[in-house]
Amino acid sequence: MKAILFSLLALALCGCATLRTEGPTVSILIDLDPASTERTVIVESIGADRSGLLYLPDRVTGNILRVDPQAPGAVVVGRIAAREIQGRTAKAEPSGIAFDAQGDLFVAVGPFSEVVRIPKTELDPAAPGWAQTFATGTVGANGIAFDRQGNLFVSGGAGGMVYRVGPNGGAARTVVQIEKHVRTLPDGQTRQPIVANGIAFDADGVLHVADTARGAIWKVAIAADGSGGRPVLLAQSPLLEGADGLAFDPSGTLWVAANERNALVTVTPDGKVREVARNGSRGPLEFPSAIVFVGERGYVSNFDIPRRDNLDADRAAALDGIGASIARIQ
Image (cartoon, rainbow, N blue to C red):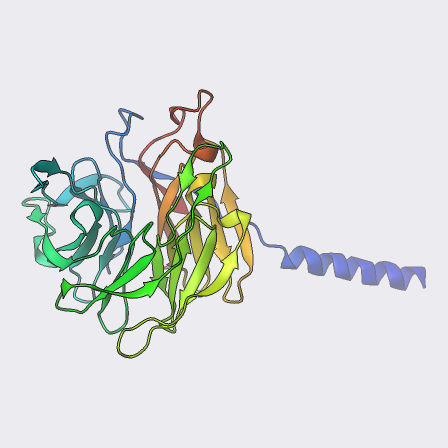
């Protein structure tokens, strides 16, 4: 009997060992500002074209950077010009980035309350194309994503709106409203009011919205006419505090960049939340802000803001980290 019990126990332990899965390996693909951690380059978002090349908008210069993951090195392929607004020069400070089905590049520009476009043919390192207005009336423009019909959806940050504009651009209209909320961070001083941040569509066309203030993910059914239904809470967790960029991997699992915690988190379709990677202020995750998948491999933009878990000892700036960079998930 003892021998039988021992054999069963051994089989059970073997089975458990087989079922165990390890977390992803996260490493730095490229340091986008190797000479400095003084934030002379700031990247908040990351996208990929159909060939797997990565694109990031630089909030400092307005340049669109392109990186080949197979031979990492950043080149400028597009530009967003500053503007005169109410008598003052306003930089673009671009955030969300996405490609449409034709391969044209779109970027959210919060200071202009717009989304701008650079045609695929003008994404050229020899003669970088200048972005032109595509959508207007997107106050607080932050995350962007296309649905299967080619409509562009734009999140509105602290205002909680999600806007929609048709494939031909023009004035956007509000189709979703996330109720406003403000959270005070653990330092007792910093306040987080952004309730509509990163957005992404799942395979069924359901819109998902990152609520940074609540540490939550909302899902919204989008009707055939492009209108949004009532937001439904998919998940809310301390692990999601700082929820920023969203992306679905090939298996349909939602990945979340939890920027304040220097973490990557996954959320299943039934709302189960799991932390899959986290580190201190020295990276490789340093205020991760957005994720994109190219096949099975993921890439993360490191925004590098001194807040919460990536504060350094004097609580002023994360000077011990790598700064603006792309992290690779394997």
